[in-house]
Image (cartoon, rainbow, N blue to C red; front, side, top):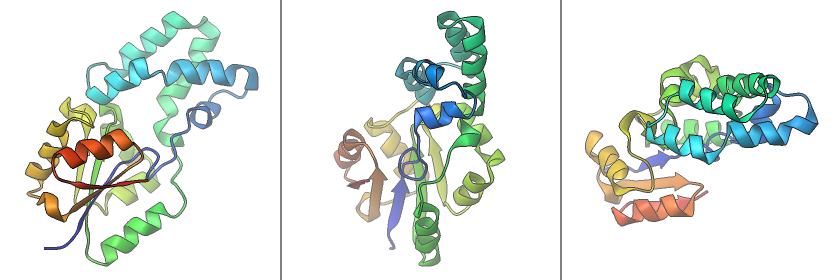
Length: 188
């Protein structure tokens, strides 16, 4: 049985820099930090990852925290973040090389339902994910890393043997979560 590679998305396959993602909608340097901190507040994003808040609820909360002018910019940044994600140089090529060599590829990402339903509008992400044998998005399941349930879901859904899996993530706590179910991890 061959090797299965399980990739995280943010800060493994794509750079997730909140100021960079906000700058696509906010060209005023003085506002960039303030707006990016509100738009990408973990208070919202942890709930988006868990599927317990909608995009509209996030934008309503943003409107409650900022002046109307700033809120308009913030909501524009929020609505456009998926299309502004850049690949980490070399990672799409690595994924292609692994696929060419016969590896099985899986994605396991703490990410929103709206990303899961909208990533195909971004050509590089759509093309990259087409190489994967399976995709698991936390927002669709209501399960998040580092919880063991999401790792067990991935193993069960795709009939994977944990001994043949390598999980690549940028978070040590997520690597520990994988180890708790017997999946080897690599901290990216």
